Length: 368
Image (cartoon, rainbow, N blue to C red; front, top):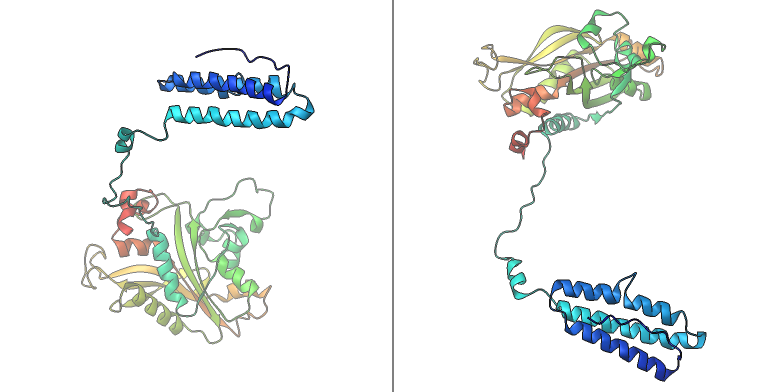
């Protein structure tokens, strides 16, 4: 390649400009004629079009800046035309497109099936929780939600767990640090059940109330095959006049049949929960053996599934502080709660609760 310096222009008339740019075109054409490799093409680009030391940049600095005002327009037009010529020489040297060999290497057989994009699916816990909610939505229940970080008042005290009550030990939870100076009822913790939403709903809405409450809860439990410090619950609350235990039994019997099949039977055993009186544990006939007895039901033919009971008047007394309509002499109600993971383990034959939270795609892929 030639490496001639860009001369200074002493005249800017039409003839002088034609002569000057014709000389530059000859230089550029001569340089382009010798390009025989990618390295040479890159050197040509830098020599003529480089931003710092390119010849076009030098032409702009020497000629355009030094031109008198009346010559700048004509000089600029010729400069742009010459730049287009240089860029055309560069494109011609580089070729108008990839070689036949390069095209063959990148060829795509359009008769082959395309790349399959996997479609996501609901997590088995989410799917089970939605199924439970849909059963009660069909009965006219609305969905209630609330915060996972709760106060001691809503999580315990308003649910008839006064400070020092032994039942608090069974719901040992994770407490937010640095609250020693706060009153006991204002201290924050991770909720141990979704029951606080029951109280929050009653404070905001007079009876009748029919809500189902799905959500995540936390307890300070050691992880094993059937326990996890993080799990999910679905609770329900029904409050109105003349609500009886028979209404509770009929509602849960229908729900269990909707979830597990019309052949499932239910039975109730006395139990204790601070926020219900009377309270009961609900068992269903074993869905694996049909009630005949197997390893899953420990040969009893029954599986314990959830807890329930009639709302304790003491709970209505807390709600009555903000909603006078919750007079336990005039209204009654029932509540129930079930663990989502337990039901999901039964429905899908999962033996380890930790598999739901491990994020193993081999396990989750079974539910797509």
